[in-house]
Length: 386
Image (cartoon, rainbow, N blue to C red; front, side, top):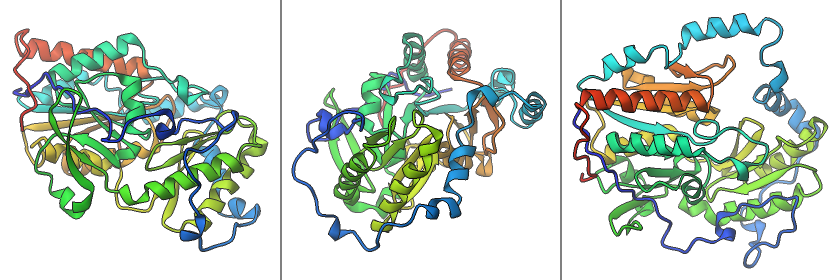
């Protein structure tokens, strides 16, 4: 498998300096003063806020509950049988490792990883979602053998701070903020004004691709509004991920989920160019553009010169609804393998499954061990020259 390692990373921040305000990691449980002047919402506002029954009739609460089952109920009421049946359709990537390895022979693996719930456990406070030192070491080893990218819903700056590895590529805001290799990606032609050349910390030329750049002022304003409007809801946390805003309700009493949903609905009423998505006890507000994690995978494969090739095997590991876009892209035409991280049955386009980050770590470690054997114990010269 001739993949060129030692991927020195193109991670570094935007040309603008990084600071805590820019990262937008705030909890509405703490006093908050927005940086700079407030932007007027009249530029984007078109509608009046809705009523509380709006989120009920639209099925929002049902969606919030179905995507956020109580942990204690995961394996009750015969769900062990349901999980076994589900595992038959989406077998363990660990138990199926020999099958995966056989298919990977004479192919170049490209590895794509989500962060929260995949490399780190899901925790009550998103600021405390740290990956273990063992996981970091294994991800670093993966990047020695395979081109590797983290594609997260978090801001790119924040996920880089959490991972701290320069060997990887990073895509934040569900792929709307990519600092990647200088390659020919035809997809960027659809967004010619949102690609620019820059350099990473090591002085290497890289491309910064941000197809939703025009939405930054709008997202900043939405963030400030949601911080203000949810400050009276105990446990609510609002995060600014630069190109999207997350409202976490993991620590909110279920009786207050409806007001949380209504706060987000009011934003959508005011900003018709934004849309709502949801994940595990989180609601997100994103730009209404045709871009997602699946598009980000395609973009990175193109930039690396690895798209539309029979000798390439992309693997994507993730745990949330937003990762389904990447699973679908890889499933089409049997382009690669999606691996869902879940301890309960879910509708998914992934081929394989893993239960938790611990199993993810075992799978990645097995992949490194297999690659070492394939290469006779030698690391190929895998420098990122496109």
